[in-house]
Structures are given as structure tokens and as C-alpha cells.
Amino acid sequence: MTWLRTLILFDVDGTLIDSQAHILKSMEFAFSAQNLPLPSCDDILSIVGLSLFEAFDQLCPDADEAKRADLVTSYKDSFSALRETTAPSPLYPGALACLDLLQGVESFVLGIATGKSRRGLDHVLSNPDLVGRFATEQVADNHPSKPHPAMALQAMAETGASRGVMIGDTSFDMKMGRAAGLKTIGVSWGYHAASVVGENADRVIDHFDRLLPEIQTLWSDL
Image (cartoon, rainbow, N blue to C red):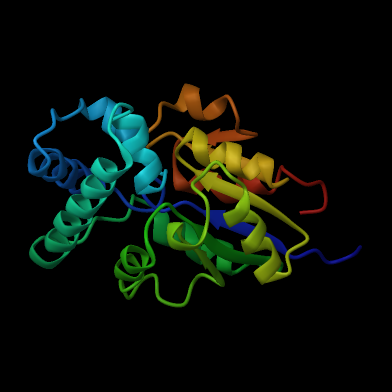
């Protein structure tokens, strides 16, 4: 049987780490700094995964480009300050054990596709438990916002994978994966409702210990 390299591509916020507290606090700061009413928590979490310009476009559809740029700057400033003064966003339960299992499969290669900036992802990956795990790291600085497939396509190209699966907590992740021709597995513990994620996912899991078994059902030769 032909050996096929398989890319396991992860989103970050809401999938690997629970960054909700930092996101909400930074949004509160950004809207206050620009004298704009703060959207609801549900509205804010609904845009997690998009690039910041796209996120503020959805949250503030009446704001002009200059105002959205100011919101982006305020958000980034707040998020940077929080990184220096608060504990890092925690990994979800079972994440590290799952990554260990996946890395033990010879045909698998791990990657990241995130709406974070390069600087933001570097901060996450400074966690000693995550160092060196990912062969490809795609960030918002270099690509159109999800659900455009650019991140996933670049990750496939960089790893030389013949096939792949996108793991994420939002409909943006699932749509991106499908647009790039990847399989898709949604997680229920993130920022979009499992029912919403499931509309564009091949599978939805409730815990990390289900990820490898579900991946093994996606292709008949695993």
C-alpha cells in the first residue's frame, strides 16, 4: 500500500488554547478606546478565527476603514499588554496527550493555521510543551482571512502532504478546510456552537481523546 503523508492542521484559539478571557478583555479595551459600544460576548466570540480587519468589519459594519484600523491597533496593544501581565491562555484538557499520540504516527505531520498574527502565534508556541511540534505555521499576516483556503493550501504545499484534515472550533475553519480539499473535524469546546461547526464538518468531537480515532475513520488505509 502506498504510504501517504497526512497533514493534521490545527486552529489555535478555541481549539488548542482557551484564549477567551484575553480576547474579551482586549475587545473591551479596543471599543472603549475608540468610544464605540461593546458588542455582546456572543457576537465577539462568533468572529474568533477571522483576521482582525475582517473581524471588526463584521462587528462594526458601519465603521470606515480608518476606524477599523484604529480598532485593530487598540486591540493589538491591549493583547500585547495582557501577554506581559497575565498568565498565558491555557491549553484545553487532553491537548498535549493528543499531540503526543499524533506525533507518534509516522505518516502524520502537524501544522497550524490561525487567525493570529506571527507575533501572537510565537507567544503561544513559546510554551515549552509546544516547541517543535508543528512543521508548518500559517498566520493571518501572510494570508487572506479564513475561510479563504490560502492557509490550508500553503500548509499542504510546505509539508508535501498528499491529504489533510483541518481541526477547528469554528465554521470558518471547516469552510476553509473544505475549500482546500481537506477533511474536516470540528471540536465542540470552542467558540462556535457544535451545531454550527457541524454543518461543515465531516466529524465533531467532544474531547481530544476522540481525535485520533476519528481521523482513522476518515480514510480507509489508516
